[in-house]
Image 1 (cartoon, rainbow, N blue to C red):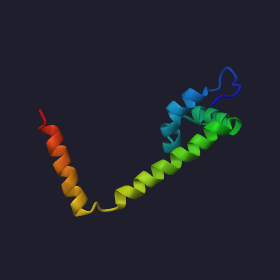
Image 2 (image 1 turned 120 degrees about the vertical axis):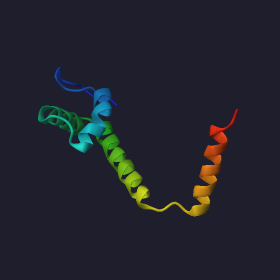
Image 3 (image 1 turned 60 degrees about the vertical axis):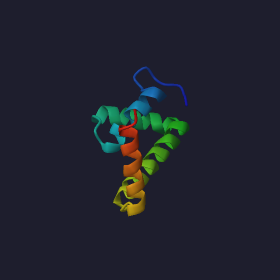
Image 4 (image 1 turned 90 degrees about the vertical axis):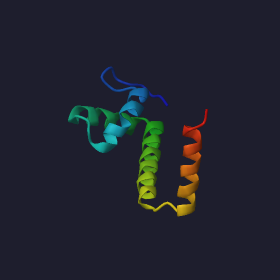
Length: 86
């Protein structure tokens, strides 16, 4: 991921580091506008943002599903074995 940046524009690495705050709306207006300009000019970062948003959405949806009791029992057993392993 890379494209030409102006001196005040974030780099691709900075965009990735701020992506969660960007999606959550926790950036200042200036930061948000700067990241938006970067995303508009950098197709790989824009594609990564889409993937990131999809992954977050799928994770939220999966939290709404109740875990089957058999899986819950197996997970508890596994964790207990790992915790008490010497």
